[in-house]
Length: 275
Image 1 (cartoon, helix red, strand yellow):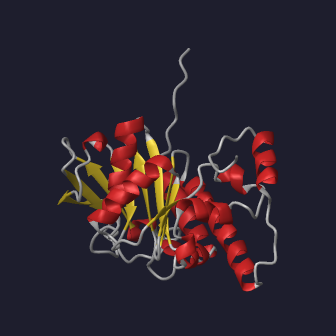
Image 2: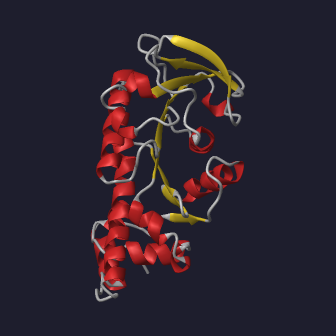
């Protein structure tokens, strides 16, 4: 007998966005309306019972690989902490048309936003790229603005992928396990710009979390919204230790490369950051 894949329903996806948004706020990575979340579902979802209003929209970038499927995304200016209490007011659902240039945006009559997040181009482009390249049927993408990671990216010496990973992966044994691919560091680019969108897509091919210098981070996961948020939380915790050490005058050793390599070997982790 062939196993049947059971996909999450709309209610479950919205609940996961709410839980993820709440956690981003709990770790002080989303002040006011900062941060945004999207989920790609590559199976049929009935959205009209909760999002009854429909309008045709032109997508910010072509997304032919997503045709016929749904993207849930937060609205521009909405607070991530409010998704959990009222997802209909804060989230829209886009069903992509054939050809991937247009779609139908479904929203609730209680909608509290004029348009989807200003970073929707980056979310959409990442979903398109990952589905086209890897054939994923689910993906969560989270943008947040964690203070310590963002602060470190204001320091020139940390604005480099190798340097950043060497500093933030050395504070907890779990870091090399949970962030085995590390964090990709991008230069500063205008938020919402085509330049940032393109660099972000390329970065998330190689990494599962990228740091937008002087701005924030974007993380993706094929498993859940929570897993994407976990990556942000681990990276931010490493950055917090690093900031604490800077303030203390660089007194701490951190884990040595040998110790990190020993942890990786014990857990069967292959990582470029272990040598």
